[in-house]
Amino acid sequence: MLKRNRRPTPPGVILKKYYMERRGLTVTRLATTTGLSRKHISKIVNSGAGISPEAAVRIAAVLDTTPALWLNLQGAVDLYDARKRLRLWRPREIVPPAAEA
Image 1 (cartoon, rainbow, N blue to C red):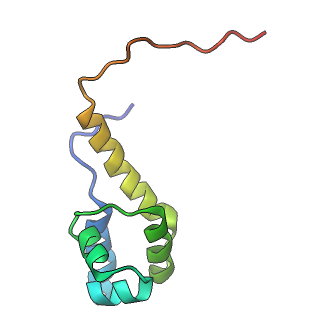
Image 2 (cartoon, rainbow, N blue to C red):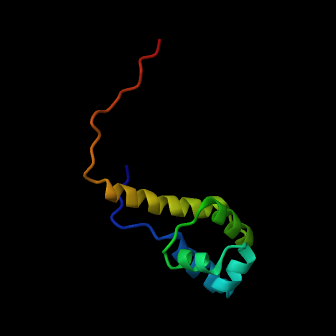
């Protein structure tokens, strides 16, 4: 398994730097075009909120990308954070697969 030394870049940072800034999109305009609230888009862009599947579909449609792009970026951050939170946790037992008949 590949071990990361740093947290993946949050999707909001990528959204802002590579999509919004390059297209001259404001938070207000992206909110209007996606049908999401300005407050929610602002939270996503400032890493205060993650991108839900619904938001991914809307953002992808407006920016002509795929929802998978946004969900994969979000998933990488979520998985990194979970592994960091659970770094000291160990299972009580490892259950092997059942033998085939």
